Length: 254
Image: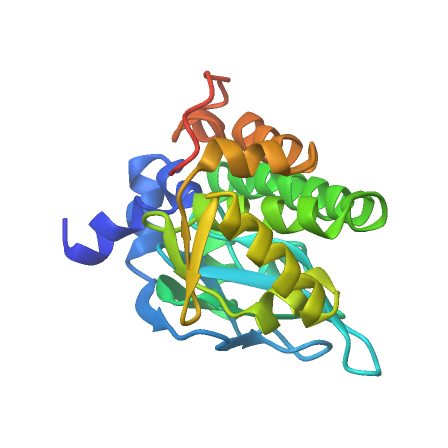
């Protein structure tokens, strides 16, 4: 297997596919490096490509007419950016961009539709299960943004991002986190200072390092655990969705 094929197993959707289906998919995927804030698709414009993140993390973001933004979902190595193509849609009223730079596998939308028709059942089952995780994540985010404090939401966001990258460090500016949470930058500065003082994180020159996951989880709201558990229940062990049998959950990447 070439490097592209070996990399593909880092994405849980691709890893869940039976080997023949997996091989047919990876033959049509192109490895790419995503830069921070690289636009993946724009609101209300046709989605040209789908992306299976390997080490990159993407955000789905709603932007208001006054320029205010808030994140509605996060996609990392557990998922795919461009899910509406699977659902038969051409576009979304939101944009997606790379939140954390890194590697991904890209396929143009038309080829993706062809692959779905080619591979039929197994790929469709995997994507149906992932669709449920995204819907659940969006619904939980709505409740979280309405009911929980900025500090709880920041802890949740940091944990979800740390789960999707290779290690505890990732690039993050306070301005970016403020946009993702839909709050003022000053509020994020205060929260980041408290989390650093408590020993949960360090923050220096736009890079966050998670030092104490347990402490960060204790400061988070219940939404982090709910979103994580839905992901594990829906995707589970690689191969579980593809062969139609439920298996036990696997640890979330740390």
